[in-house]
Image 1 (spheres, rainbow, N blue to C red):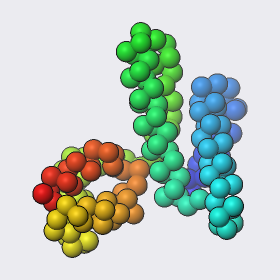
Image 2 (tube, one colour; image 1 turned 60 degrees about the horizontal axis):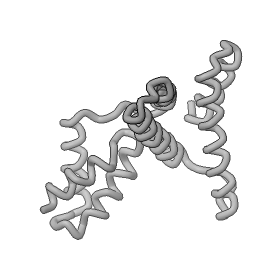
Image 3 (tube, one colour; image 1 turned 45 degrees about the vertical axis):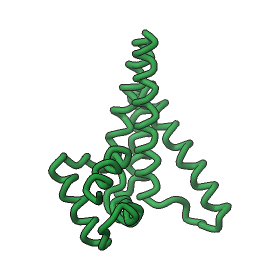
Length: 152
């Protein structure tokens, strides 16, 4: 079952269950995907964005909500931070399982070997390999530092 189908089924289930938070979050996800589909059609891609692009969209949504929750907690707005954290839980249901630290290290080592990288100048090649294989499974902000350390 494709990611789009899973989102659609979950949206319908949330409507039936009258789960307002889940429904709002799923509608927000669908609206973001539709915006990207429209942009893709403008560029000549009539099929819309791929599942890898959808995973990137969802990962970005999680990261945005984590930043918002942190800001709300620092500002003393705990009820808004709770709301952001509940949205993160809903969005993460559609993301693949995050790789463990050991799996991340192995994935980075494999990507370095596959790309033939041997210096920091090859970091872009390594990140390209990682993004093509592990979108949604890695936090590329954190992985960048590890890749840089291994290539130095």
